[in-house]
Length: 205
Image (tube, rainbow, N blue to C red; front, side):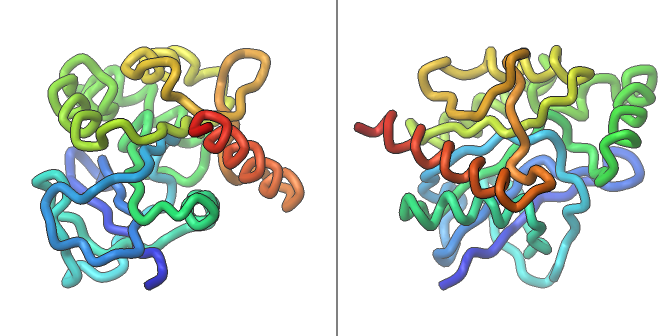
């Protein structure tokens, strides 16, 4: 069975947001699936529902079949090498915006609106929700791949502070930010996968 993606989308404001994504190659029949990997990325980008009639319940949230993108395919490649069946993806922000320049502007706008920091699962207002996900993911590895946008450094640091440092896996730059899974060149995309797999295996040994 090939990997499928299921996302939970919600209309906090327009456009819709996405707060959780499940990637799995097994049939999801339980509200609390066994999770092999937790991935933290920047934001859902262009993620959108593929078929709203195909639904699964994940951590008490109704998720619909979601169109996979190239970034998620990178995660799937890591999963295949390590024989992982199910991964959960959360983001620094739930805002769906494929253009990074527009994404930064949207975050600035939200900070002055009634939404405030609630667009991020790592905000203080959503501590209970985040902790529930962390608990349900058990002791699985945590890949940080939230990008090296310096404007997001404070949000990145807040996110990493929510986890035990020895569980975090990622390819970092000199400013302790984590490279995105989908750099522009094919060679660097392969390098990202290779480095992540090495670190997963190194932690497991």
